[in-house]
Length: 116
Image 1 (cartoon, helix red, strand yellow):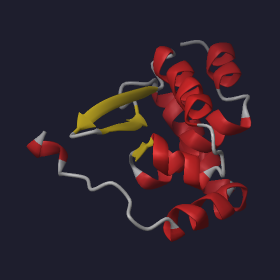
Image 2 (image 1 turned 90 degrees about the vertical axis):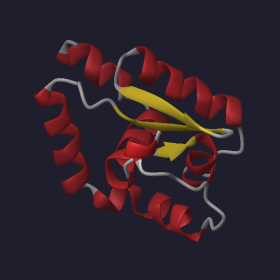
Image 3 (image 1 turned 60 degrees about the vertical axis):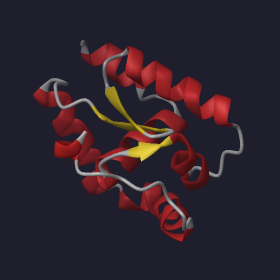
């Protein structure tokens, strides 16, 4: 992954906020991102997640009817550091999104990754 590719993939508000929300929360499903981002279009969120997954920035796991997205643990260290730094220095950028997620209620149940 080149820096140019990395930044191109994150140069969209939905994709950047999705990555930052996952960095904060660990993993999220499409319905959680729809709520957090106040985006009523499931296909739109799914398309953005597909871009990130195809770029190897995200990985998925399926549990029952849910598909959970998380940041790929195998991305280059520098890319992970950029995401962490961006999250740490820009909490205000996703504050409202985190609040919407917190207010969501009835979020999908997760299981420990060791049980998958």
